Image (tube, rainbow, N blue to C red; front, side, top):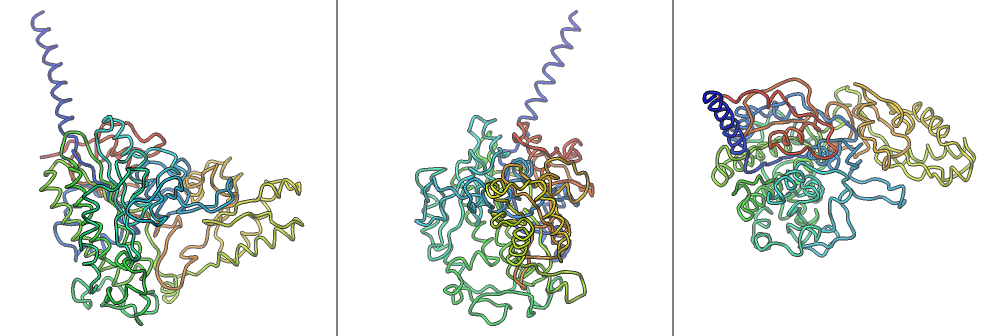
Length: 548
């Protein structure tokens, strides 16, 4: 009997010790990094030029998911940031685009816009932002609930949507950058009544002003062999400079290019983002106690440079070599202030990007440009002639046709018949790859094809009535610079790297999806999944013992 009692006590204390060990192993800080418009192949393309303590450190000492994809369309910034942090797609979290036509108010709305709040740090409407249009919780929200609101959440990005959506509904603060003639980090009254003193101090410093300087290549531009020529016809550039080529005198160009906004459109935008993030870590004492904190950090300037110069430009290459240094500086700061082994990082992207279609066309790869205005006019003209009524289509937004339900009902036109005829007509048009109707997306279950991505991005309440898919490498965009938004691999295949506390070393080429990130972080922390999460924890990283 005594032996049995002893065994019971031994088992009890063993389980108690294991529970305490697991509790102690929780990271004090989770840093979720999103690099805007980062294609997966940037890791391999620029690998030889990366230094040892940035991207290479994350991959060599962390876990690299080499076949990570978005599982929905459209691949834009707003839906991307929301999906990463909610663990679900627009079907559930409701952020169906950066902006979309609201069929109930009959006007375009912005994913983070909120007229009910007031700006902080600016008098402009750029400060009127909140996450109120996102319908589900984020992993940071769940952490706040789990810790009885003791764990902090701070969101930081040059873009408002890159800060507001990841930080979630319960964030202590979200900050974004206001350029123009201000050059300030701002927020809204959704989070606080006034900016903290440390933010005011940062804004009053000369940090932002110091980046109005010359942007030249980090290394000899002739050594940038992983990109095209510095002077070509596929890049946008800046107003006031004849050629889109290094160097760029940002101070002299700023007046004609949005004032301080020009910083955001160069590699220096990532520098100022890092400067502000490091200040936030210190001032907010992130990772300083036993309750896990969250820092959601989005580097947005990579997207702006890609849009302007294209994914094959020397400007993009230089931006990523400099971002590599930013990552190294962040890791060093976290080691010093939070402590090695006390934090967990994941790094991913909100979407990829396509090579400039004009460039692809020049090397005989099918590509092109699509005129939304001409398309909308042609479809409306067809609908008017076929059904004998005008104003049957209310809007064409984000590759979706929104019907005027009132006009259809008044004319006695059956919606299903209207959808089918429009879809059949549109499919015959040039540059159209596929067409899906509301009836198809609401009633069918697609598995493992393009329809799956469309369906995952389709929100029954907010989305339109006919969804149009363009041919590969076909953009509604200028003939210079790159863009994104499709379900093709160049837009869906993005990095996913985990590093730090709770992460074993390794890699996999198994397909993973962007919605798997939040459930994985939740499992690592032992907290509830975001309330609408559809992704799965990445067991290949979590279920193996970490070797010392």
